[in-house]
Image 1: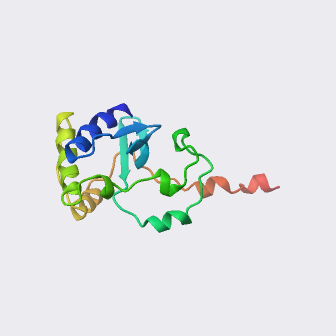
Image 2: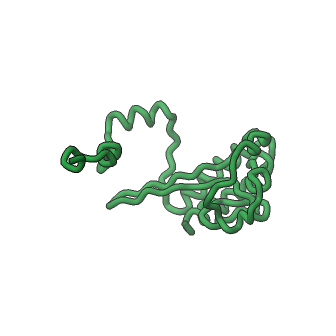
Image 3: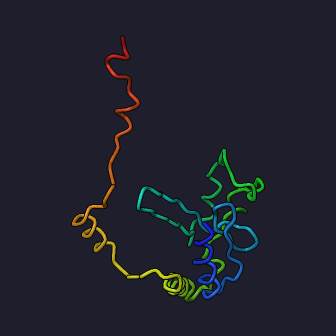
Length: 152
């Protein structure tokens, strides 16, 4: 996960938010308020890293969420509204989103990634034309039901 911090930190600094950090596998700003999370899938010769940043949300709806049974230690029992932060509130209002996107592309290029902008429509066509190698759909429901021999 350290490489993601090396990617995101300079991008956030360039966009106007200098206190970005990786903390217990979450991304935080503002002294420890969560602004994003991630997930990984690593198999054989492939890996996928997915990051979700919280650009905006309706603060009142945070009161509808329950405290999760498992939480990072740095959460310290805080409510959702005290634990998470909207990036639209910590980056410059006028161009913060655009600055962050441009800075992310630059930071990824600095780390050796070939960044190419594509639309969702182009991605959908590419996925239909060129299936992901090694990707397999598993129906776990079939494995969870008792087999006929086990029922006897």
